[in-house]
Image (cartoon, rainbow, N blue to C red; front, side, top):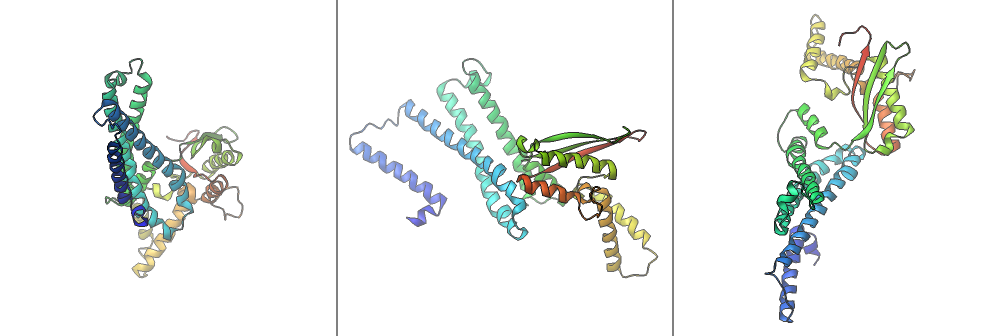
Length: 320
């Protein structure tokens, strides 16, 4: 018995066999099993439709409220177990549960005779029609947005590192709430707009989150970063910086590996100036606190993932 429940396939097969056995017993006892009646198949389709929907939405909640928020807390050495084993399996059932929900819902609507009226939102099937359209939009998002990007993020298809990072962001946008805040420097000659996201509106209203957003606006105004994170820097920009540093070191008679080390050191310094998360926090006189540390602190305090989405810096007389 234990071996059966250790395998999903064997468990489902055992359930189907048990159902058939029960039907045979009922027929043998003289009970009426109306397998040929429309009402029985209507019940079966509705049960399968609801079951598929529960699996679909349940896995959606798992991704948004369990896996994705927990990933930053998992040691790097253990993360491959999630990304290479658990996530692909969960995504398989996630997308096919979405497909089953839509297909079974269409069959159910056709069996009930209201498919056409529901599609055009005709009364009295308007609410069912709205549910059908919302479900279809969610299904399309699963198959044509989330899944293609997850294949890139999980390494199922081979892409460049920059594409992989971008795909991961698009595939798991769990940080959907947050704030867009404006910071105006005294004198009204310099201003900043910054968007910071979190997972819930509740956290967006907390003092800790709002203080972080305000500090980020001041940081952008004072330090004028060009990018949010080093992963946002285009590869051609990085290569151009490396070329500049190599040209500066061209007259130094040092081994190539030493030159490469110096170049990477200079690049780290460039990151600390141009990338917001790598910058030293302007309100810390010691220079030991990075902006990334501020964000991590609010992450830990709120138990939510905080994301600096974007910013814009405006200064009077400065070209756009």
